[in-house]
Image 1 (cartoon, helix red, strand yellow):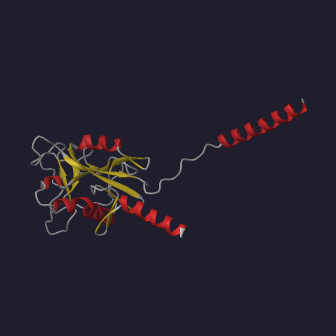
Image 2: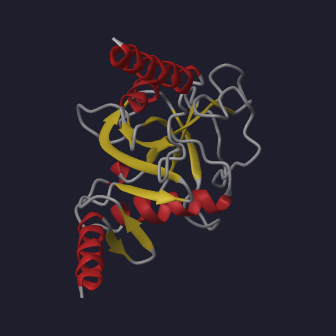
Image 3: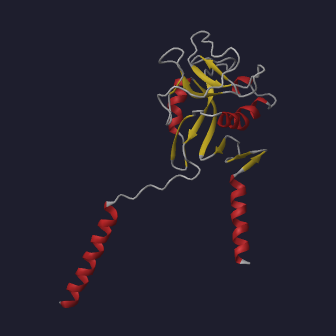
Length: 219
């Protein structure tokens, strides 16, 4: 009976922290945080220019893991991000459509036409997976930064567009876009390794304690 009570308490605790919404299991009540594999992602609604979002992403953390502006390296990951964060906001009545797309860490600001990841483990590498929409990237007005967009031009949802750093496209007085923060291995973060010197120090202190007791007994 005691075991049953414990399991019920655990189930209730988990249920209060995970919100189900179709196939997505959210980790917060606002449905802005969800996990894909071992990584956790946060959708930050407040719009920022891309360069500011790149910096701001590092101020977030989850389970002790520091964040970075999201990198998207597979179709499965991209579909997850669209289904978890972009699609639901696009489908919500009254939401500014330009607020239902988000910056990712992809830019050709260093070398025009060479799209590189500017954050995370992939930082400095050219993107091997891309998901541009029809006619994108087009560099219209010097656009160097990528968003996951809501629009479908016949190629499916979750396609990417290139934008300028501070475009507002209807975000009156609020230049920029929402952005996606990624936390690597944040579902079950690895424990911090114990330095090898600590066990040696503990053994030495224990040995010293034994020696002192023996000395005290003899005297």
